[in-house]
Image (cartoon, rainbow, N blue to C red; front, side, top):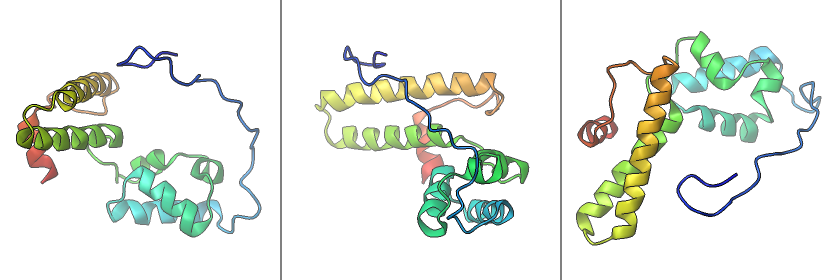
Length: 152
């Protein structure tokens, strides 16, 4: 599979899945405890990836989906703790803000100018996808000024 914004090929997308059917026996938490930890961490404002890392490192839960049968985002969604902007879109917006800040100080940095263009095109592509999936309101649009205000 080719990369999106370069002419290089990148890694192949096929991986051999490990046949894991059950939650590992060495993990001490049962599914209800895992869900309660996910809900508690979600209420503190942690993102889904941060919740997964905390559960892995502190509570020895290798995979929340195997333990509970639901993903972290589904657990948060059923308990109405879901964030208004999806995490991947939020991370891209944060990257775009940092690139704009860098370009204000270094106006001749053409590589970062191009990187900003690519990042903003990814943001627009993702917002289009999330509009079709009804995860973002149709009135929501990306603008640099609003993003700066949102992250401050």
